[in-house]
Length: 116
Length: 111
Image 1 (cartoon, each protein chain N blue to C red):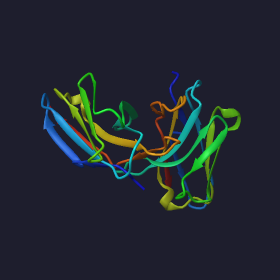
Image 2: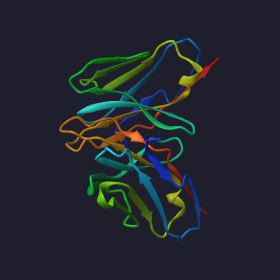
Image 3: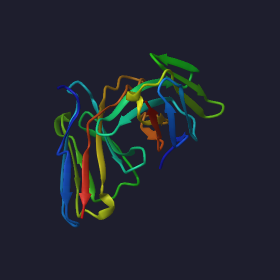
Image 4: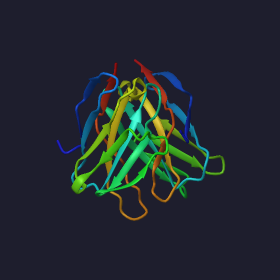
């Protein structure tokens, strides 16, 4: 399967703990995005990378969130000192950006985080 | 923050009927995209329409864009049970083509 994969699919953690999620994009895609989605809402942009460079981070994103994409391949999203409000589905997507055409984004299945 | 607003929030129709969903947005855009999300299957890209296009077709899907009204519609013809899903519009408005999403329309196709 050459689609976007995310690991783990589900994570239950206690408030105050740190969690880390991994995303493996489609190999030839140069852009990688992280979103958060809560029930009944559309995805909310968190951050994105072009190759290994993190180009933008949502102003709404707490400093407890950090993302990396070493070597421009897989990416990790870490949440430190989790809070109950962090409970959501975390989605990763990738795309091939060339010039002015944004390209469609291919989404992974998501990681569902529950903070107790 | 969400740029797009889909209307209606929920839609229930009989199989075989046509379904129309609308999306309104707030700022000038480069492109508008529609995605489908099935429970447990993730988001799937359906169609992209550029700001200089007015209508686009893909199979049973027809998308229109009216930039003067800052709105778009998605028409699904001859609906099937498999079309049951949530449908989202997403717009990109800046030079980085970052997508801003609406809250979605939940479509239920009754057999």
